[in-house]
Length: 236
Image 1 (cartoon, helix red, strand yellow):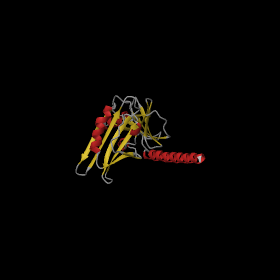
Image 2: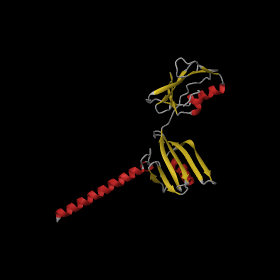
Image 3: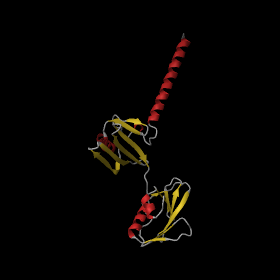
Image 4: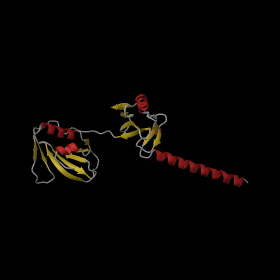
């Protein structure tokens, strides 16, 4: 009889552990694709009623304004400071609303972004919490030259001289505001070279089709900005 009791207790324990394992698995799947999970952070409160849904949190109805007010009030209480002024957009005619905000905090590696929008078709508010790296960009060109030379990817190709001040300013702006890149990049395909007189900048496409800029000052990275490519007369 005693042996049967132990067997029953063991059987119940196995069932309980199995249920607990599957519960944790379900919870884990509901947070799949999230870079940060508020429930696991002491300083990121979760608005009441929000439920995880793989890459975002959802709540029935249009609660964008309430959620915006909540995080504007609660995040500073937890030591967060605004790094980008929150943007709240309300369109009463189309019943559309959304907001986006970025926050930083001492000891937090990166920035916290909190955004929400009302999904009219689903009739619910969708909120995304994201952890993003802090990007830096170094100014390579401080003095704007009177003219620049742009070469194609062929070594024998002649220079296309640019004398228009506005065009030169735009090219310089793109280069100066490209993100500093210290990671190993994929193989690159050189597509152009820009000669500023005292600085030469090689322009390349990576295997990911991002744009890489390289000079004796280092390497920079930018998304394939169509306007920048058009300024260099490069076809994607």
